[in-house]
Length: 135
Image (cartoon, rainbow, N blue to C red; front, side):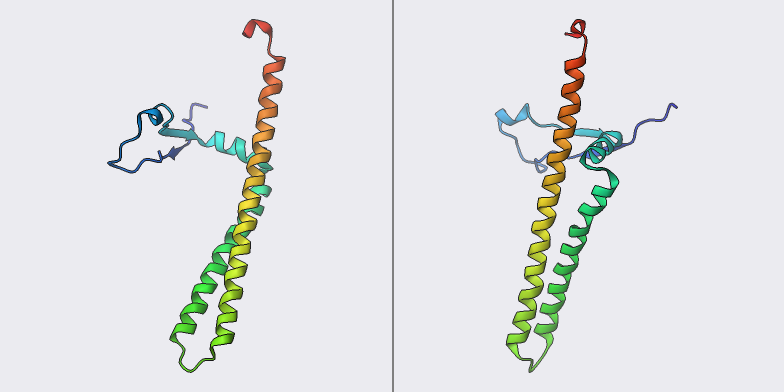
């Protein structure tokens, strides 16, 4: 019906009180993006299933980062602990966290490229099929 579209805030990359260079002023955009636009992108990226799969490495990365911080706190507060096993445990936590971050980054990049390609192909097909009177 007559419902207003839901909007999402988009922030500029300029901190409050900073000035933008003159050549960047034309490129700056501040405003809102309709939620339907974001959902279109999610569908183009593979749908909610792909979005959920992309969240798994994010959750894993956060959990392993917290685990490494917990390990470091436990190691620092312990007295008389052997150092080598503690160092090995911390290194393992950190390596798993780094691997999860790399997987997450690659996955999000792949989803972004797939969504961009699908949206581009769809738009190009519509422009090519548009009647010449449109131009």
